[in-house]
Structures are given as structure tokens and as C-alpha cells.
Image (tube, rainbow, N blue to C red; front, side):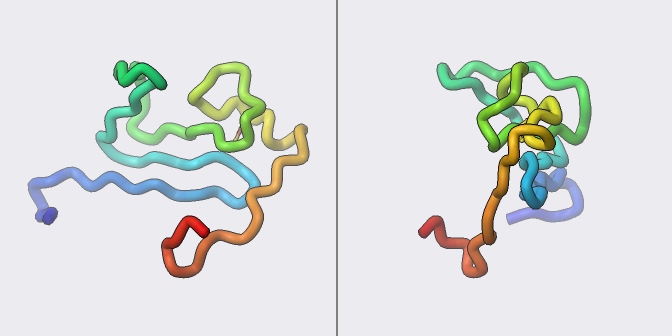
Length: 77
Ligand code: FES
């Protein structure tokens, strides 16, 4: 449940690109440790090509990454 006092976090899948995370989400690494972030909006790599994981470094533009169709009903399959 959210209200005007609860900061909203949104995650937006960019076509053929990263996931944009807006708001005060805590990003954790594979060991569960918080990854420092300096911006209110950050881009998470989903192409696997970045040199600075978990952040997008723009490599998706040159490695041919295609995200494919997004699920219409929120399901993973
Ligand atoms: S999505 Fe941008 S480098 Fe992977």
C-alpha cells in the first residue's frame, strides 16, 4: 500500500535496452550487498554486455541486443 508519503519506485523496460529504475530502490549485488548509486534514476543492464555491471553502459546499442516482446499480462512465460 502506498500513499503520498511513500516514495514511489518504478521500473521501466526500455525497448532493446536497460531497465530504468526511478525512485529510492535499493539495488543489491549477487551477494545481497547494496550497490552504491548516485542518481535518483539508474539504468540496469539486461543485455549482459556491460563493462560496469549492474549498470548499463550503452553496450546494448552495439551488441545487437533485442529485448523482444514484453509480456502483456505481467507473466514471465
Ligand atoms: S542494457 Fe545497456 S549495456 Fe546492457
